[in-house]
Image (cartoon, rainbow, N blue to C red; front, side, top):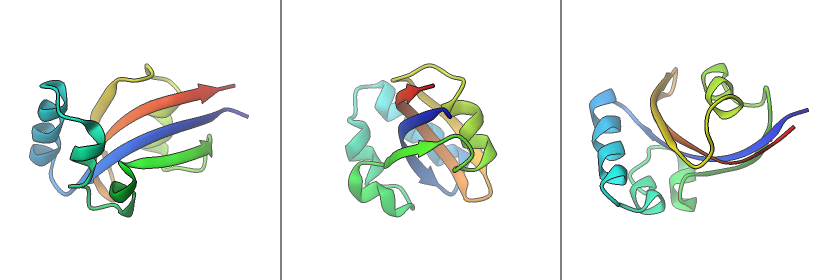
Length: 92
């Protein structure tokens, strides 16, 4: 079964998500920006730890198990809000 590690930032609006993504693109540290996340993982730099395919919402799985590593993806809309997502590791 596929496994991955990722980190994310969760905010209420797409506009805020895009603003934070631009800050990261401009050189801001992902972990520092993650402190603005509305998810408790923000205190750990957005880390979601290791997880298997199917453990996260489908919108996450689609990105985590198909897109490039070490790139900030998003905004990704889920029932929780808007996410920026960075896949840090993946194995089959």
